[in-house]
Length: 266
Image 1 (cartoon, rainbow, N blue to C red):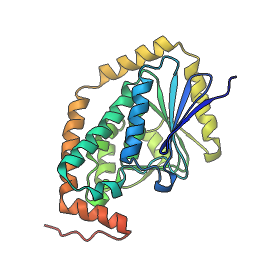
Image 2: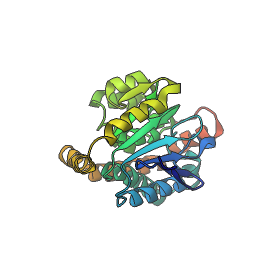
Image 3: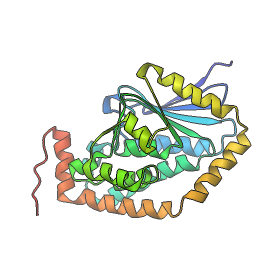
Image 4: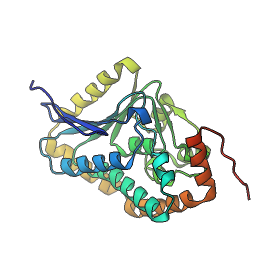
């Protein structure tokens, strides 16, 4: 087998093996791979390139360090408190998430550690997901006064409504076994067997003809999805307005300061 080829940016690593498996690794381990503007831009760049890459057969998204992805970079968000900025940010994030669904290649999330808020949205936006048995998932923005509206779009398309709303309304974590039971992940493996579990899934897919996989994926989403762009536009607008509210600004600042929020209840 030929040696894999690698492409590296500061925030995203790409490695492609001889089989056409493209591995994108979120590379902000010190920030639990939070989706900074730079990381979102790097992901979008790769999505745009993969859209027309006939040699790429399957995409795997993983995270460096101790976690898969902790969601949006709250420090960046708090530093630019304007409605225009938040609308643009959530729209760009939504474009990345829908872009993964629209890629012709199957996309697998390889999850360890935590996947929270937009990180959980990223898992839900991938076609398939494999997680370690100690992985945890949450859409925890509500704990900081910011309801996870845009992650809720993807979550509601993976989980039954009441289970999705329980996660969104409480901000509580679920474990990997619960995530599998509810449909957020496909397979769960011991932490030291995660690579093997992903490889097993890859081999099952790589043995199928590309034309059938690409045609089948496109048709699958076309026939089950109705109005996802409008849903993301509405959710992004709601989340941007929410982010401008005093409760969210205080909640995010409290997160940055590592303290409990001091909310003024109406």
